[in-house]
Length: 487
Ligand code: GBH
Image (spheres, rainbow, N blue to C red):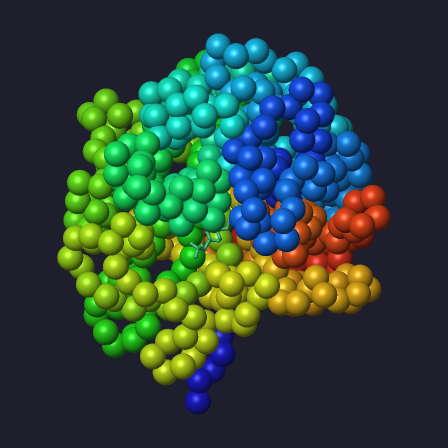
């Protein structure tokens, strides 16, 4: 008989929990007060790119409704709120010699002030995918490392200067994997490059995602250096990068190659960025499989990037089964995973988790604890903030509102994932200090438009963007009360 011994679970008493959003997904106000277009404004206009043909033009209209958003946060008892800044609101054309838009800065200063007045700690992301369109047109955006790094450094400095006395938690980039792979290989995200472009900005489209990743790493490191050199003494805050990554289980648990491929999948998704940030170099498996497609760090770059995290920002949603294919150098420009199959069922037909509205998302809470431990072991127990975690629900959008508000599936997801995280802290000695659920409210879900809802709050897009908290919004505090102060 197997006795079920409950794992210990707990979180520190000053644990920061709350909710996350991103500018383009919630703000709307696309042309309000001098905002310039981003690559997402342009991308949404391409027929067929967004499932319901929509855009972030209006979204949740948060640009005009921050008071309501803060009220929502207060109702839930949240201690923290993660939002992102629209670069093209602050500098409409984006560049270091382009004019600054004071109205854009004022909007975020007021938001931070109002949050603080409400007793909510702001976590600010400098970049959540919405590159000023002008920088893409001018020099190819991320593909031009030197220009991009200089412009991002300038933008960061402008924001630190304006918000530094209020904001003590900074995230440079959200999920560079997505800008690189979805933006420059799959083409599902802006700017929509695919690996079959006959004429690539860098001469060989199969190299683009890795060049994008490299530029973002260097830009991240520069922003961190600027913060540490020019602002940290004055403001006393902390700064890091946010990376996405799923947990992996072997398709055949008895196959050594599948088990190795599991690690390789995490290396290709997460360590691509985290190894440079902690060790100053790319993972061996990537160097081996990508060959010359992977850029190399100069000694100076390596020095700059190494050590550029005060905390690890973790976005985590799900898990997959992994089946090894090969470990030769990957010639296929579409292969960005490291030569493996990513599956929802294992060899025996077991499913990793139930379906959701997102084709890629199958909840599997035990993977959260395992990944937190995996990362903590590899990077020396860094301080971790979970900067996103959440789920969509299959068919949710087709239900009447009263049923959408009873989101037990989402609530169960949060309960099981937060428990797994609290076990990683109490049992495995991992240093998790905060957790921000994705998302405070239903919003523009990128290529899926408004059909997929990730919010703990229902947004009625047909009736003036009115907000209605779902059950999960109101239960979050009860979940955390169970764990906070118990380690
Ligand atoms: C987050 O990314 C985003 O940060 C957030 O803005 C978004 O709203 C949220 O997810 C919900 O989607 O095309 O097969 O490569 C989550 C990580 C990584 C999930 C890329 C989707 C695409 C699968 N994402 N992944 S694939």
